Length: 511
Image (cartoon, rainbow, N blue to C red; front, side, top):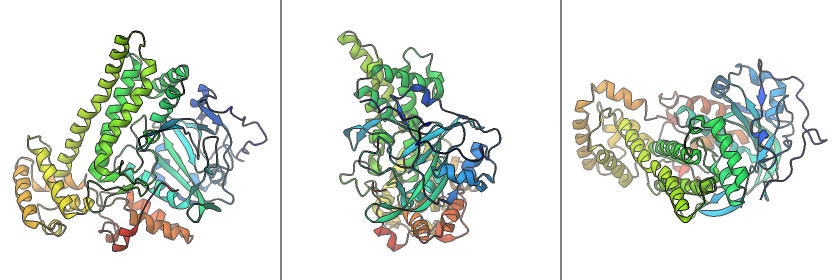
């Protein structure tokens, strides 16, 4: 099913122009995706927030865009990023996509509460700016198109925290709020997150045109992706195969990074998978506290499809769904040709498994302080993880304390029940480190990859509770702490084990 016809921004529904062109010097907006035509999106204005206010802005994201440090001082900036106005050159639009949700084909989806404002030229290349929570679109289904302050704070902080950890991710430039009521389980208040990425294209965009039998649009979308985001695939004998392999390798690196940090996405539907290998759509995510390979961070995931230990295999499943969506672009003649096309696509997906295994072991080696490679390294990492799991030892603190265990293992031992087993493992680890340089160098390497602070649920909850009372200082303070995750924070509580009350916190798909 194609998207509805796009209303014109020149209609009476159009957003007003901001009073000033932009607070940015020589800002130039482009709309390359809009050139694809109305089958790919619906152009429509945002439904802005009444009486908006800043909750927080990200200096790091603004710097990447090349924006001045005081950009948010402009009243026009607040109105634009709250969805109440546009700068000249912006063309707000919602894209159409489909996807598999919890392994089941869900049909047409789309940007139900997101609007792409356009692309901005930046020192890092073109960046799309997108408002999340700016009102209903033709793809909202039964939703209101709004985002609540609670989930928006989590997404804002998580986006920037993951970037600081070095994880490929969409970014968050700003968070605006309003007293506008939004009904979820209870009445909450509305917010809008300004998200930033080179592209928000998802597996689901390709699935949409494949499943709705629109091969011409599928080809247009692939050509668009290759031209603007994967030019190295243009000269390949079969660009669809080259793109699929590229996405498979990037996805493998991404999932390995997640696993190494104890990060759980929570909703790895195909419509939440990025064509650029970015972490996309922070909903019911979570960083594990006590290590449990079967940990399910999403209270709505009753069967545990997206549990921590299943994320790698789910990504592999999703890549097969993407491969299926690219099949119409392959030779479709005889049965032999179809079989050969299928095998070439499957081979591209298979690249994921080898890359994931290599990337995962590389990350475990780095976390263990190893720079050389030996045959027993996988077993060494696996055995430490098993010890962590048997004691439900805190994931982040186990690795952080291991980083200092060459000088003092007592804090690490305090996290484990079977300390004799841990001591035996530590002896193996110390022996393995004999060829890895001076202990000081090993410790420095480990402290640079094993964070002191991650966005634990209780830290986010503290910021949310303060914000509900009108105090946004904790959001801004926590953003600063999370921007330097490998440094010991000024407040020990930011890196401490979670309090007992944190065990009762639940996150779900409700936002």
